[in-house]
Length: 636
Ligand code: PLP
Image (tube, rainbow, N blue to C red; front, side):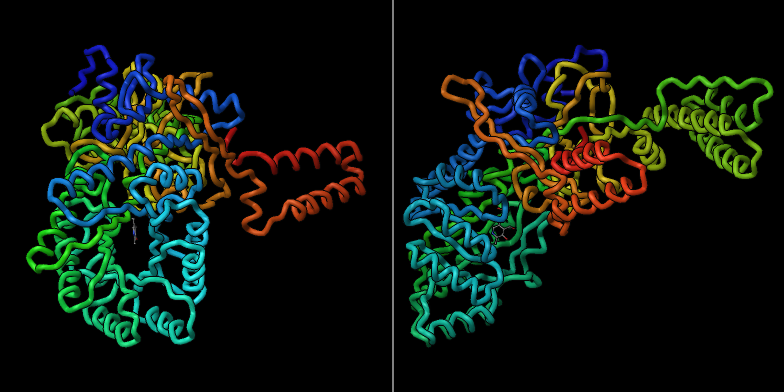
């Protein structure tokens, strides 16, 4: 839907402008009040009003930045995945089972994992871990009986010990051998008579994924056994009398696979290896197809990095059918299927809400700087261009203005211009630039120069959060997230802005936004009103961002709140989690509270001794410092 500036701006326009229906998977909408909503059952009449949740959280002392979690979306996503595989198995009469595994590294938050385990109980949802600490968490979690814990990542003896412990405690643990050195350790344990968990073998497939994580697959991948290493591993385990311990083949060709063709190729290649091993008398129970099931972050349904060109049903069909067809061709029984979809299960459930603190405008809206007759020539020249620039001459006049601007700064450096004239000259230049961009955009093909200029002319909305803590994948990988105002969606967003965070690093910004056709260089936003908060929501933030976030500038984790719809359709806040205080982030770098207070006490004692403070003032200052340590590091 195109939005003309003459039309009345409706809720439908807002939904179309921000692509909410395209990326929302049916879970997001806009209500009559113009607020963003979350619909766990995809029914507009049963919706959570996001602004109301933020306001209620504020009443409970939780300010923005605030991470909202909607656990019912976790349930819905488990349902989406397991239903798709159930349908595929039924359609193709797949004779073996399918079980999902949740990779803990995608979101370690206990409440998230427990919600997934509850939702996946019937489907036998298990866990995938990539390190010993993750295994220590997994073995204590209430996994459904008979479900699996699959151990990936490089393993030392302590990791294998933890796997053996989990097995003794009644968990079914499969240790995936990624490299041959792990096999040596495993066989050494066998010789020492230690407890031995079952084994999976990770394949290094020829097939690769696609998109930002493509390098995880293919011959140069960090993990996995080559074909000859695979045969060696099978041989050595068999000669040690441990052939029956090999229960699984595993592969993972990367996260966020954007093209379904890549999934099909990988499944067929792995199924062929499975079938060949079965035919050579080495029956294997499970084929684990790893993660990679993607999310349509930009809603375009294409193979662009921020999208996927397939549905979950298509993914399930291709996994099931691919495995079945190869096994039928080879005349072996198909394996029980496992997948390690993380992103798909958890991305939707979290929405980060940030408030806009201020706006940086390179070109103030109203600049009428008519020069007096005795104004410096450079000012008069710029004013003349500003007054006469038009669609016919904008290119030439803009280039002239660039020269005058350089001249302006040279004169200033030589002491020939006042500060006031420098300011007037700058304002005039930006006015000209603004007009030049407007004229350039009337052309069929806009020159790169003016596209870049437009980018520099966008306002910057200063948002109260840290990109490094809350959207690390945007900073590190340019991953796109849908961003939407959570209110005023019944009002035309007349400004376009990029977002900057409050860290003191120029990388701390968001200047790429999802769009159905391209990547937008700026987001449509509303003008901020004095005395009113303006909130933006970053959606689909539930996968990977929590564990990858860092402590740049010591901002720390943000406050969190969980919101669910009760059976009557009322929104209930079910859990809150306070973010780090300043003293928490300081502690991670060795600044204990006690040490910090001792340092400040010493300063106060010296000031008192020198007569600069009396005892009462000293006590007040110490108390102020103590309180500051206990505060949320984000801006109040
Ligand atoms: N399994 C393994 C071995 C992984 O390395 C990953 C992540 O890259 C996953 C599963 C989860 O992938 P995704 O979140 O794309 O489903």
